[in-house]
Length: 579
Image (cartoon, rainbow, N blue to C red; front, side, top):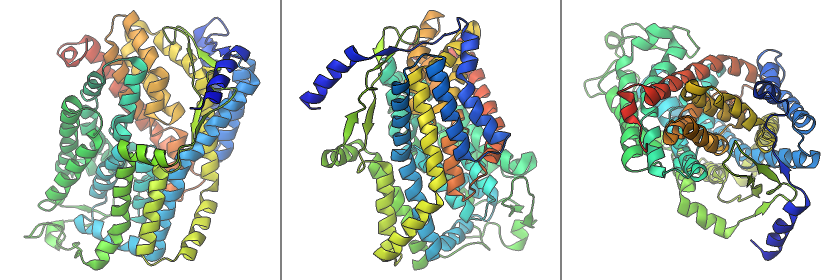
């Protein structure tokens, strides 16, 4: 950073700083209820008033500005800068990912290669339930581990809608599936951030999360198929679900406990994909589920083996098998290229190199270190940094764009045709980008104004029940910010301090923040907008939210119960690491 910037930073705090105020009413419960008004505005507008997502997000942002300025005393200029930083961060990198993945998807549809890809997936299995396990859970987990930040939902949502799943099914099920892998997403970024803000040992945190989430890596595949096909539909394919869950959970536990957080999802997803694909070469359900609608039981073939769609002597789905010829390779090529580029863009060395080529990061004057986070949220006053990193080359969305361009040329598109299609894509996703920008504006304002900390302190006042409610605090953090990383940064320090005050393991509660947070991923507006955009189901974000909300809160409560057992009840207490 230049010396001039250093002088500015040294001068600005003396000019105007603001200490966060967490309890303006002298009642933490009342203050928390008022702090929750912006979130309540958005949820009510989406779920009950059926207001368009971008309008609901803007309305929530306006309410947040009013609450922050007139109730919590935040200076209006600082509040405006916080919202502006969030809006910019919503477009880059989140909106950038959405725009370019939809661009790639539209190219494959226009070229006809996506239809061929559908046929090859059906060649592995024509059963919709098994396709969900392959695409939404295992394939999505790989993208979560490699990139995170909305990439898995964007990719799997687009693939599922192309396979014929109904828009609600493609959107909602992609969101439900993208839970258990989230804590180790983007090559372990949430865990690394959690260690950074708490000062706790990185391996202890990685191991502790790895002793919580594998239980849900077993549960979520069953939950996913139950949400789609009902209990009987789930029970009919339990062997495949068990293979999927076990082959993900075991590597997740081993890698997180003995190797660290970096490659947990990548390795677990690849093992799960390989095991499930291999298993389906020797096993197919007796009844093939061809309905792509939620709960719609439409079996085209009642007895698969009798009709020739069961496992053939050579393995695989006999009647549905598709030969892997040149056209099949061409159909998979854009997605294989995408996988390679996303993985490369997630590597620290690649990011460092690209940032060395182009690095535009600058503090937001008037906001950077102007907001002071104070006890009891932190042990000592801490000025909040506010830096906008417009490192366009190292953003995951840029890797996706390069993959789309390379795939486009390979599919026979010329430069003019791709530019024209890119323009159409921008028009298609315009409201989604506006929604994401407004939602990140809301998230950043919530963070810098301390509204999130006020809600967190209300959770922290629950005493002996804190292991349960502290876990839900992580869920709330992700629901507010759209990011397990951001939730860990927001509440990691609070979790550590509160745990120490009431005699709990700080490692346990910091890990619970991340593990509970993953279940909030499916209801944050950012993820819902990504899902609706990927599936082309614009204007139906409220329906998606209503569908996934129960699944989100129910799974979060189950995580809370597990953490409570680990806090108080042997033999679960023996699972706690780090003291």
